[in-house]
Amino acid sequence: MSDRSHHWADIGESTSVRGILLLCFVHRWLGRWPFRVCVYPVVFVHWLLNGTARRASRQYLARVHAHLGVPARRPGALQSLYHFAVFAETLLDKILALGQRYPVDKVTMERQGVLARVRAGEGGLLVTAHLGCLELCQVMADQVPGFRLTALVHTAHAERFNRLIRRLDAGSKVELLQVTDLGPADAVKLAERVARGEFVAIAGDRVPVRGGRSVKAPFLGHEAPFPIGAYVLGAALRCPVFTMACTHVGDGYRVRFESFAERIELPRGSRDEALARYAAQFAAWMERQVRDSPYDWFNFYPFWDQVTHDARHE
Image (tube, rainbow, N blue to C red; front, side):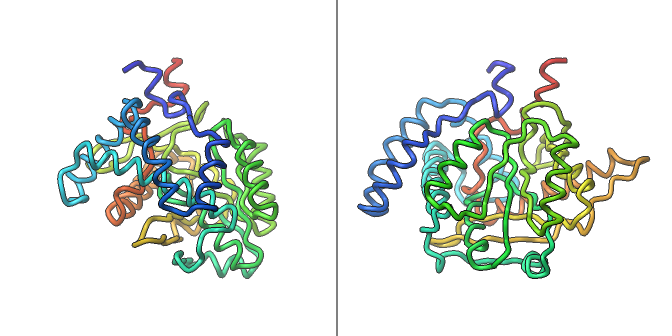
């Protein structure tokens, strides 16, 4: 495996907006099973040909099994293929959620502290992971007046998917904002949004595309790099921080918000130690999520072996 493949952004994203729209059309007019008939052969071919993603899936499943005892059986090729199939189904649910067509009665919301802040017109920071269908927070946006969310993403496809979101739902209260290197100017803009009572979401499980630092934290029995951007941003925004996950429960989902920190504090004399503690706290939170729903974590790249962009150019 080349050094270049050790960063998730270098693997590339093969998701096609046209393909997504076609699958949405199949689901809308023919239903879920015809959708599966169309998508499962694609999933199998992708699993077969994408060795990097397949190996990453099997490594993750083996480690979650060894460390947490889930899934109950020792994972093999079939479990990895099922992991890919769950991702494909979740991709459909993401689009349905953004288009306000996912059944609301299949979503359970646990909103500790977040709802009170929305009603008070106060914003906050949400630290997320690539767990399940986070777009179902759109259900909360529909149910709770005043809830607006800006999700920070590192891919170059943010505007393309914003157009897709607007096409599916012109009134969507969820916006994707591309950030390759979160700087002071970005922090100021985001602070203005939080001051207006909006929420900002940032992933805590992917190292930056360019710049930024990461720290090591134990995850599923092995040290892994975690980005510090969420905690640096939280310290700059000086607002309450919550975690957000949305994982499968039965034939639906549970959206769960939990308090992470009332304030992120990074003391000048012990900044590195504080960042490491926050990263370890987040990694422990991730372990709790995957224990409940092991097939809902979608990082199909060598997670434990990833390096930052800058480290590859030293």
